[in-house]
Structure formats: structure tokens, C-alpha cells
Amino acid sequence: VCDDVSKTFVSGPPGFGRTRVSAVHHVSLSVAPGESVGIVGESGCGKTTLARMLVGLERPDQGTITVAGRDVTSARGRDRQALSRQVQMVFQDPYLSLNPRMTVLDLVGEPLVVHRTHRGATERRERVAELLDAVGLSPDMMSRYPHQFSGGQRQRIGIARAIALEPSVLVCDEPVSALDVSVQAQVVNVLRGLQERLGLAIVFIAHDLGVVRHMTDRTAVMYLGTVVEDAPSAILFDAPTHPYTQTLLAASPRMGRRGERRRRDRVVPVGEPPSPTDPPSGCRFHTRCPLATQVCQDVEPTLGSRGPGHTVACHHADEATGRGAALARVQL
Ligand code: SF4
Image 1 (cartoon, protein in one colour):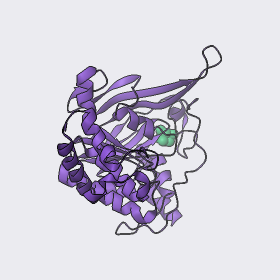
Image 2: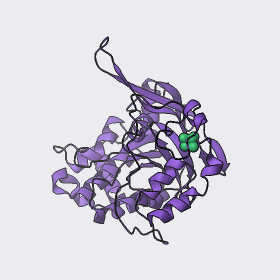
Image 3: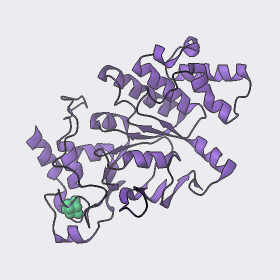
């Protein structure tokens, strides 16, 4: 669970007009055991910073992140190490995230060594074999190096490494976007299978809305560091409420009735997002929103309930409801 989490990056030398980038702004999000939650939004909306905070690679300036009720942000020493095992990350680029000088045995076995869970070489080898099997790779491959594998196989190695410590949450940051379309589905199916077998909670960050729809139970939409809508995926993709979600979906690949993609264009939202160094007042989307009024410029909207598990941050949510279907028709 992350509760009211914010993160601002400051760059430039002190005293020379330092730049402040508000990457994540008062975000609250929860993931239940066994649930998969998608996070979508344009580049620079804060998805990756949020992911990095969830796995402890960045510390929030404000707010708390808890795993199974225990505060990760304030934990220190052994406590922190134990909690960090609970949340692991699958990185975007399987070419960059694996050390080319290490064998698969060493790569997948490294977390077992660091956390001292499998001290003996034989024990470690057996566990690595088990993990490779779990992601659909032959244990016979464990003495090979990353360059001897295809992109999809490398991502499977990254997943095997991420599940080595039996985490309860897997944070996947654009896990298939660097892969050929033909292997994306295979990797998504590996993640789905692991989620079902191991009861993993998955946070799935991606720009490809078709993949997110297929992969997740629930989706949160981020805009300029804030969550603007959070809903069960079936509701969000079929009847989006927030004007930004509507724009995002209307510009995305259209879905067929059975979920197949008809086109594979990337998301192309209307206009450029404002700079996160100087976010707009009030609702951060007001400079691009067709429904914006004075109150949108003056008052920042908070997430309000629109139904079971569905929250939206918009002053004019009633008026916006139903426009999603209209926008989708225009795009067709
Ligand atoms: Fe648009 Fe106003 Fe809603 Fe923001 S609060 S999304 S500007 S209608």
C-alpha cells in the first residue's frame, strides 16, 4: 500500500536557480495479494518513479509505503532487508538489466547468495533449476551467458531472478516493451501463470494499453505525477470517466470484442503535457481538458468514489461520464 506518497527531484548546483521536478504528487494506491494492478499514462507521468519507490530504489519525500502492514519507508537494517525481499522488480530492458559477464546460474542465484537463503552450491543450483523451470526455460541452460539468449528468454531470466526470494509483490516496469510483438504475449503469459501459481501481487507498468487490459484486474491512470482514475480494468477500459483517461483510450489501439488488437499504434494523447517543473495550478490536466472551468484552475480535485473500487479525481465527473464511449466512436 502506498499512502499519500510524493517525490520531487531537485537538479542543478545550489544557488543557481535549481530545478524542481514534481515526479509523484500525493499518490495513494493499494495492491491486494494475488491482484494485478496496471499503471498507465504518458512518458514522464511518474510511473517509473512510483515503481522505484515501491521497490525501495527511491525514498519518498512524503507519505508511507507498507507491505503486509509494515512500513518500508521507515525500516532500517535487517528489517528493511527482510521487507525488501517482499517486493521485487522486473526491469524494462532485459539487455541492460543482466550482467553480461555472469552465467544464468550466477544471475538467478545472486539474490539467494546476498540474502543467504541457499548457502550451499548444490542447494542453490537446485533452486535456480526450479526457478528456470517456473519461467519456461530449461535448467540445462544455467551455465550460459545472457548474450546466448533471445530477448524474450532474457526477460524470463530477469523474472526468474525477481521471484528467487519468493516475493509477495512483483513490480514490472514496461516488462515487454523492449521485446518483439511475437514474444510479448509469451512473457505476459509467464507472468500470468506465476501470479496464479504463486499468488503474487503484480504492479504492471506499461504504455501498451492492450497488454495492460489483458494482464490486470485493476488499472490506475497517472497524469503529471498524480493518479486521476483508479478502477477495475473492465470498467476503466470500457467506460472511462476521467477526461484524461478518455483521451488516452481514444488515442490507443482499439480493442476487438474478444480483446484482440486491431491496430498497434502507440498512445498518442492530444497536445503535449505541461512540464513537471511547473505543473498547472488546480487540476493538473486543466490546460488540455475540454471540460475545464474556473474551479479546475483554482482547486486541485481529489479522488472521489464513482462505484465499487472506482475512484476519479475530477470536479466534473458527472458531466464527463459517458463521453468515453463517444470519443471511442469518433476514433473508430
Ligand atoms: Fe477536466 Fe476539470 Fe475534471 Fe480536471 S477537474 S479533468 S480540468 S473537468
